Structures are given as structure tokens and as C-alpha cells.
Length: 294
Image (cartoon, rainbow, N blue to C red; front, side):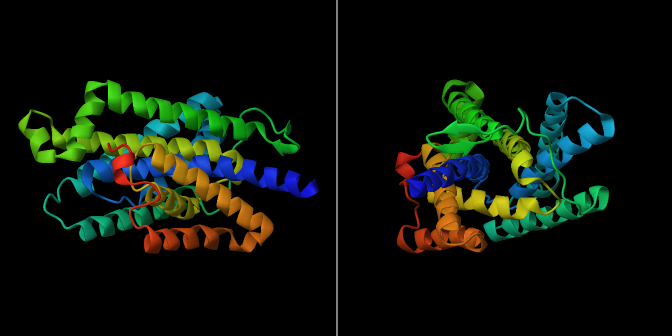
């Protein structure tokens, strides 16, 4: 019985962490499917969400909702500026060159945040207190409910936007055939810019809702970004259900491995899973034809 309770506890924690990986994975997939670029600065967008929120609360005494809104808008602006200044001018650059640029941007953003706010780890207050909630013999924090709720809302909003709005359908058209989309009057450049903005917003939102549990600092985005990338790979770099399931599976296996084996292997487990998938099923756990492209 004790073993079952512990396992349930690991699963709940893993699903909450996996939901964050799913949000970050969606951010990767949106940019990849719109531009063919793997944006390794995505983790820094996650970090910026938490850091800017804490800064707004401590320095300007803003209510948490307003601080979160400012953080998301600010991070979105960073993503838009990044696309305009670093990605758009290099129209004929190779994919490898663009990946190197995103890595450079990641280092730059991380360095600027370290200079502005220092290296100290900072904590964001929990949205609804810290009193644990009993679930099937295990406990979960109210922040876990926030994570699950926000993730579900983002998934629903993502599906509605890309399937039931003209702009979302235009972005999907660009992902399938950019030349054809341009011929029918869709501004491909504008859609690419929008993809970076949406991706930055999703990343910052993930950083905000996880900060009360993991705290945040200038360098937390590196590992979160890599694990979000793992989730996207597991889902086949699609932007729909495959990526979400990939994140949840990754978070659950990581939590179970850390609980049953050792927490010291937590990060190694995630990358071992990624390597196994790349060797055994490089197209991801779900075929591209079964995932939704953007």
C-alpha cells in the first residue's frame, strides 16, 4: 500500500512537470513548423517569464496578475525583436547557421539577465497558498492545479486558434507550403513574426506557473528548454496532441525514475529517453501524420 501511495505521488508530480514540458514543447513546435528553425533560445523565454514577474512584484509592488501580464508582454516583445533583428535578415541562411544564432541569443539573454538581476535564486509566491490537497492517498499542491488548468486552457486555445481563426489557418498554410501560401496573399514574414511572438508568450507563461515550485534564476531556462525540446521530439515535432503526450510521458518517467532510482539521475533519465527515441523511432512516438502541424 505504501508503495502505491509513493507511486501515485511520483505520478502526480511527474504529470505537473510534464505539463510544463508540454507547454515548452508546443513553443518549439510552433516555431519549427512555421520556419523550420529549432529555437534553442526558447528556454530563456521560460526563464524571463519567472524573473520579470518576480521583479515587477518586488520592485514595483504590482499585483501578481498585472506582474504576470507584464512579464508575458515583455517576453513576447523580446521574441518579436529577436525575430526581426536576428532571424529575418538571414533569409538564405542554412538551418545550422540559424540554430547557432538561436544558441547565441540564448547565451546573450542569459548574460543580460545575470547582469541585471544577479545570480541569486528567487521564489515566486504560490498563487493559491501551500496547503496540500489529498488525492488518492497522495498529496498535491494548489500550484499543481494551476499548472494543469493553464495547460488545458493553452491546449484548447491553441487548437481553436489554429483551426478556427483566419490567422491561425494562415500560419498552418505557411507550415505546409510557404510558397503556395505567399502566392495566395498570405504574408509569410508576418506569420513567422507571429510564431515567434506566440512561442515567447507560451514559454514565459510556463516559466510563471512553474516558478512557485522550482524557483527561478538566470540559468534555469537551459535545462527546461532542453526538456521541452525532448517533449517536442517525442511528439514528432508536431504542435498538437503528440507534443502534449510527449511532455506528460517525459515528466512522469523522469519523476518515477528519480523516485525509484535516485534523484541524482533525474536529468540523465530525460536525455536517455531522448536518445532511445532518436535511435529507435527518430520520427517520434507519434507519426507526423497523426500530429497536428502549425
